[in-house]
Length: 477
Image 1 (cartoon, one colour):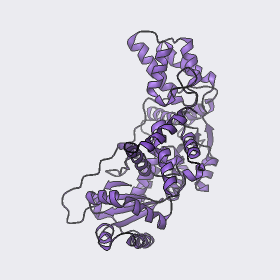
Image 2: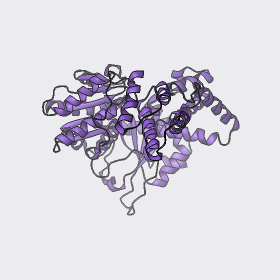
Image 3: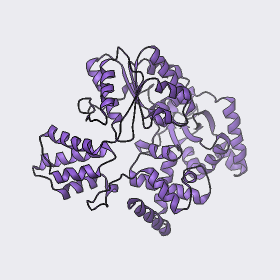
Image 4: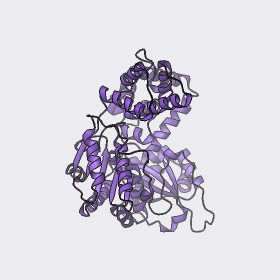
C-alpha cells in the first residue's frame, strides 16, 4: 500500500460510483466481524472510497498519521477484506486529503524514489520526460542479430512525416537494446526536426497518469496531450498486463495517433501475440504494424562488440580477457557494455594494461551475484527470477504456480516472501519487475515482503539459515 498527498486538490475529489460505494460497504461489513465497534468507528468509517480502476482501490484518509496507523495495525486485515470483495488481484492506494477546515499542508510520506507512485504536481509530466542523450542510432552496435531492428528504427526516425511502418514494435528480453533504440529514435528526430513534439513514456508512468486523470475527471486533457504527439514512444508495454481500463485508454490514444498519421514506436519483452491478459484489439493493433525482434548477441557478435568499444577509444585488450568476457557475459548486453565502460575507464585513467584477474574483479564488483563458477570466477548463466522461484518452490515442495499464486496459507506465504526477498537480493531487479513475475503484484506488496523477511532473519536464526541455504543453492545451480 502506498500513499499520496492530495491536500492541494482535496476539493476536486468526486464521490466514487455506486458500485464502488456498495462494495466498500461490503468490506466494512466483513471488517466489523473482526474488530471492536470502537475500532471500526475510529479507524475504518472515516475512510472514503474514491475510485476503483485497473484493480486499484483508491481510498481517501484524513491524515498522514491515520494512514500510518491503518497501515501498521490493520493493513493486512484491510487488504484481505478488499480482496475478498474486489477480487484477489485488487490492491490499495491511499490519498491523504485534509478536511475543509484544515489549513496546514500535510507532509507526504517519504518513501524510496523507486517505490513511490507519483501524482504529477502540475498536469502531466510525460511531455517533459527527457530522452537519454547517450542513446544514438550511431552508437547502437549492429550485427547480424539485430540489423533489421536497427534499419527499421533508422527508417522511422528519418520518415516521421511519411509514416509507413505504424506501429513499429520492437520486442526482446532484458538487455537486448530495446530502450536504446527507442531513445535513439527520439533523439534523432529531435535533432533533425527540432519543432516536432516527441513524447516518450514508459508503461508504469502511463498507468499512473491515466489513473490520476480518472481520479480528477481530467481524462480528456490526458488523452489530448498524448494524442498531440508527432512521435509517440512507449517502453515496456507488457506491464499493462491485466489492466483493462488502462489498455482501453491506450488503444484510444494509439488509434487517434494513427488517424493523424503520427509515428508510433513501442517496445515489449515478448512477441505481441504472446502477451497475456491483453485486450485482443490492442494486440491486433500491434500486429498490423512492423514487428522486429532483438535477441541476445551471438558469440561472434559479443566479440565484435568488445572490439567496437576498444576501437572507439583507441585501446587494446589481452585476447585472454576478451575470451573471458565473451564466454561469460552471455545473456545481457547491459552487462557487457557496463563491463567495457569500466574496463576502458580503468585502462585510460590509470594508464596501465589490464590483466585477467583485474577484469574478473571489475565484473564481479559490478555484478556480485555472478561470482563463483567455471574456474574463471564468473557465472555462465545469469540468474533470473524464474530460477529463484523454482529453487524455492522445490525446497518447500510446492508447484511454482502455487508459490506465485494467491494462497494465504501461512507456509505458502512464507515461501513466497522468501522467494521475493531472494529475487530482490540476488538479481537486483526493480520492485516493478519482481512484482510482474510474482503474479503481477504491485510494488508495495513486493517491498513489504522484502522488508518483512529482512527483519525476520535478523531475529530468527532458523529462518536465516534457511534463506542462506536457498541463496547458496541458487548461486550454485
